[in-house]
Image (cartoon, rainbow, N blue to C red; front, side, top):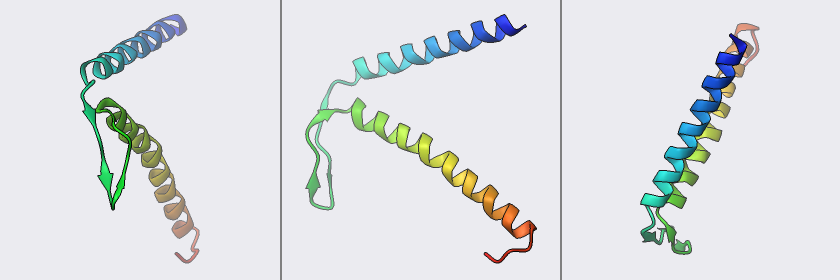
Length: 80
């Protein structure tokens, strides 16, 4: 059973890697982003999209952990 989990995990990682590679290769158009007067260098459109994905993957669990921490603190009777 453990070997099946390893094989399925490896297969999932390989498929995900292939999808990311396919996405990057298909989105080579250049794009320049401007925000609040600051302009970023021109990069392929896949770069900002993948950057936004990675930032979201980092921020989401942090916000979830903060919510759990607040809930536990309220349950103990601490002020918020």
